[in-house]
Image 1 (spheres, rainbow, N blue to C red):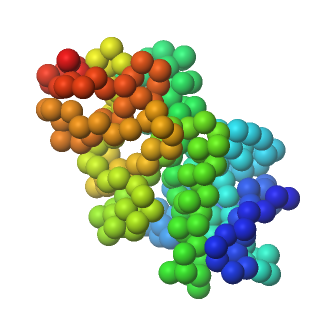
Image 2 (cartoon, rainbow, N blue to C red):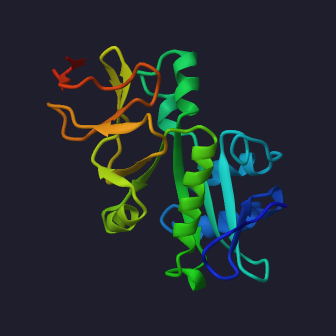
Length: 225
């Protein structure tokens, strides 16, 4: 089983196996006591054979282990759920393209006796590298206010809305309550562009033909030039 060394002494990362499922569920439930079953929908993916381009096709499930082989942390990620029910994504080919270009980190959990040591940061950096190698242009996660500085230190940009330009004046944006979005571009094509009329920057260049033109503005319905 391939392991990735980290900058932390004795700590390694590896893709999750089916035998890790119960421990992963315990870790994520421990850091989310108000809704301990919130990530149970990851359980079926964890039971699947490992396969690219991530760890379990379009899902990324990673565990961190200490020098004794004990699981001390985990990261769950993959395709953003909002892509599948957004009314602006109404064509299978567009959905397929976006799923292959936008990754989302859904959960990061570290055992209580290993918190504050950098394990979570190593998991997040590893996820960003994995998404990059798999051809993704953007990785996102939802952030509570108390964690915003933490994600900034990991080179994420914080914004109120995630607005993705699709080209031809069309844009899509999910709606979240109680959190902001932390996002990081992963390739030279994808950038954040300021657009007149919008409070948050627009993800530009994620898809072919979707670069925001210079001088573009939002008229309340569409992107105009």
